Length: 128
Image (tube, rainbow, N blue to C red):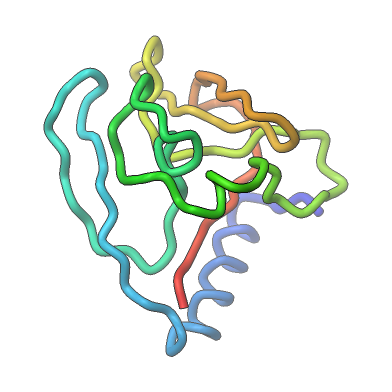
């Protein structure tokens, strides 16, 4: 199912509000600029994963630690949709683009560097 921008935002908001009493606040590390050691910390209830949290690689950034799930499993973690997109956005900054981020392939362990204008899936995470 593909969503229009406003529809998607509304659905995420409604989902989040419906289950907010179960959500646990998590402190996430965010790299401010590519190739910079400065890290900011934000408290999140709903977030995108970073490259390091999936692949345990610092080549694209140094945000967080690898989740045990991704260490022991494949990257595939988006339910198949009718969409033609096989990549999903990460919060890690993209190297060559000033307005881009990294994205992960849905069925293999590839990371791509993409301009923010690309149309990819969004797979937010939460903790309960």
